[in-house]
Length: 127
Image 1 (tube, rainbow, N blue to C red):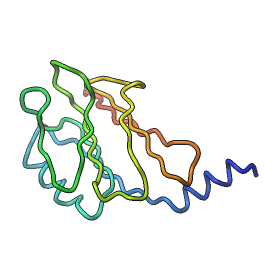
Image 2: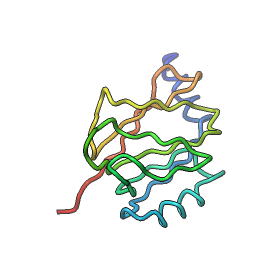
Image 3: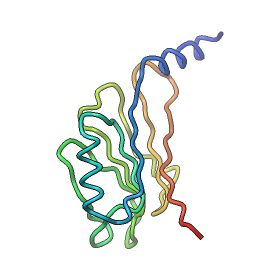
């Protein structure tokens, strides 16, 4: 086993990230309920069809940081919230990979792994 593979396996075994995903049907009540559920239990909350006002304003939560795409003048249908107390990893927006109202990417890293994990949040409208 190579050193990189050994480091990757160690990372997978020691880094336990809790992720909650939900389609919010543009409802502030559902968003607040899920964020309340997620506090102290979840590291990352992945949202589709989040409530947005004036194209780029959404709810906030004291325990989470909101990561949004940099798309202007359009309704963003995907958001990611990362727990402020997530000390075991860092998340970085990857708008250089994808910058869309329907898809976003973040990289997840910590000091125990050489490669970053890419997490994609994709909204798929029903046809």
